[in-house]
Length: 70
Ligand SMILES: [Zn+2]
Image 1 (cartoon, rainbow, N blue to C red):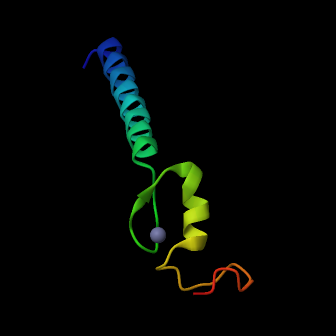
Image 2: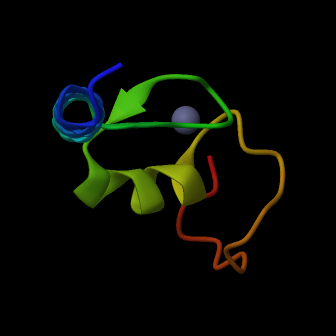
């Protein structure tokens, strides 16, 4: 195979991989982050707060204040 052509193919494949990775990252960012407890998607800004308050999260990370007692 022509070495120049091989280099061109390598560069094109690399661009496609990077482009695909960026596109995947953007689509994931738009979709948000998946909560590991309830499996729902939340915006990245809210996922940390949601994880702490998720009803499916049985590991209680917040100290009991009594304020949120039902
Ligand atoms: Zn959740």
